[in-house]
Image (tube, rainbow, N blue to C red; front, side, top):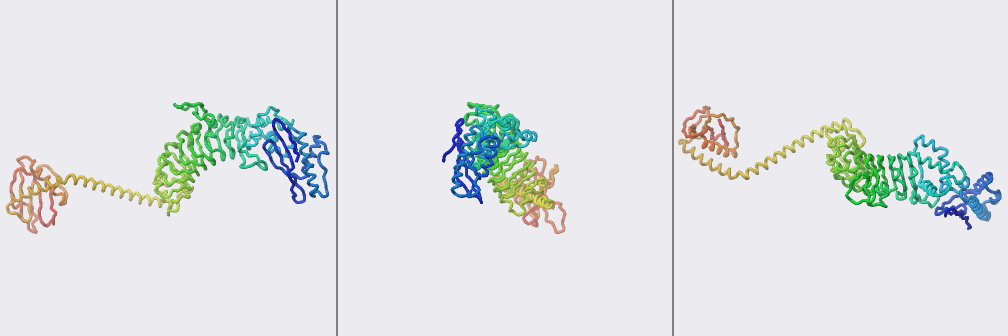
Length: 595
């Protein structure tokens, strides 16, 4: 088919009717429009062409005879449809030639230029902002644009042409520029795949954000971060930055200049390495949300966001926590639904954190969370925590108030809630577990579990002390075996000495030594310790002054005799007074009393 071609600054526009469809009792004509590399499909019935023609003739834009006449009989016949298809195509081509630079509004909307073509898109947006732009700014509402609209604005600003090309003051590009300079809240939402009925892929369109001078908040979704220009121009005033389904790394968003200057350093940072670029920091940015991207690591670009307090990196591909020690003001961190398996020394990177979301990872241990003393809210749901003992790592955190452990293997353990709460000891009543405050019944059970735990710990401490004492005694007994043998020898020689001193031996003998000094009475001494005591007694005998003496007495007591007076006595020089009762009624045990 023939096509109409118009060229303005290498812009090529084509229109053709590529087919027809019978819908109910009327025929629809399938129209393909091409502008440069962009192509889209629209569908119109003959009555739509007729309405367009009436409006154009009313505005004295075209002649009435250009449109093929209406047919009432046989309008859906094959021959008539084929003939009309060609005539309508010529009609549209004629209109494009008649209006080469800017199509009338009715024609622009008929061919969907306001959705897919650069001039039509900007004209439609300018007219919208002319009517309600001021109202949107006063209300402080979030304004939504798509990458295709931003692409059209960017391209229009590159052209050396009037800002109002179609003569309509409402469609002046100046309305857009005035609005963007004052807008504070912007949302950019792209489209996955092709836009509408076109072949346009928005993630391949480059657009510039430097036209926005006062943005406080921007949210970017379903775009290609590599195609976004002018992000650094937002640094002076931007407070909140959100990027979803658009980035493969944090560097692409925070340091887009890094692709041109890989050797860069943050403004104000000290370094000994050679650098080619000093990059200003995001001085006002306090919230960064880069959830739902394909980020594999927390790279060094975080050095440029020192004021960030809220950081959301959920639903990415992070396997470790790093570089967050540069965020001194960070209090809220969301790392949920990544691939974290272990947390090592989290307190060295998250010193002031208050809210930490680790849900949906692969954690089986909480050992890395022990020193997060400022932590208030902790979400550990949907991990691989199976042992209740892991709770001890967070049970001593003094500020923890809300803990979520749902959908972990440990949750199927009987009385899971009370066993978890018990590990918070006196703070059990202050902890809200799985979004539910502890009940009075649970707290009573916790008190019982705490008492049992304390008793068990006390028993374990006693057992440990006994083991240490036995170990110490064993060590001493090994070194004191020679002492025992010498004690035994001394005991034997002392016994012979006593036997020679006591001529008529009796069944009960007493050796009484007396020292003027006062000695506290000792308790009944076991047999295996008496040898050492005996040795000690005889050692004292040999060390006393000469004027002291040892008095040995013996007697045969009657059953009713309680008198301890000596029946026989022998005086030995140099003695300290001791008392040995060798009565056989003690059944292998005897008493040693120092008086």
